[in-house]
Length: 99
Image (cartoon, rainbow, N blue to C red):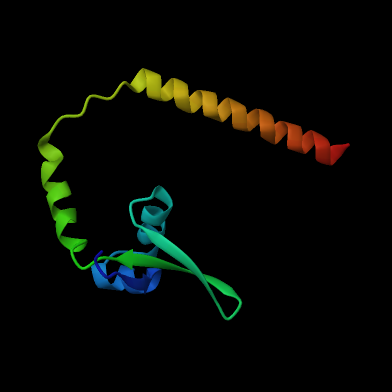
């Protein structure tokens, strides 16, 4: 197993010259592996850095020429279904709070 380095979101953003917001989006999307540790009563999110993790990322970007077929109608229907479920749950919560 390779040794891994833990760095904060701010240090990762500075090291890779991107905004903190972009790093947070990547962690939320699962693009970056994270570990949450509690220090001084606060939960701090660390990004797990492997020594070889920076290089393969460039290879992924170079494969953008491949065409990926996306079924937009199905994707829309899936998102709309999720939206309607969440809307219903939200409405039920509002109804519970009102009365």
